[in-house]
Length: 83
Image (tube, rainbow, N blue to C red; front, side, top):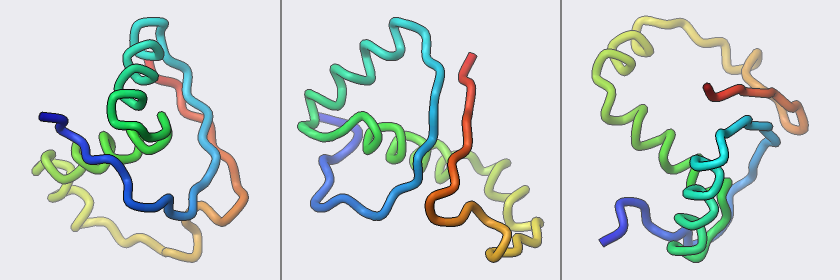
């Protein structure tokens, strides 16, 4: 049974560039194929899963004062590097 579920519909998205090692890239592509969805969906759902399971992060997050107006705006691109 798959850990992630295939999407019903695609939500609005923002462009993010990731650097992955060859094995991670290959497994991402295979998992997306397995779920019949996009690699972007797999990354998004995997991050949501990590965020929801990490109690320390949840505690840290609840103590933050986030100004939603300063959050990433539509069309803005950020770059992440996974090592």
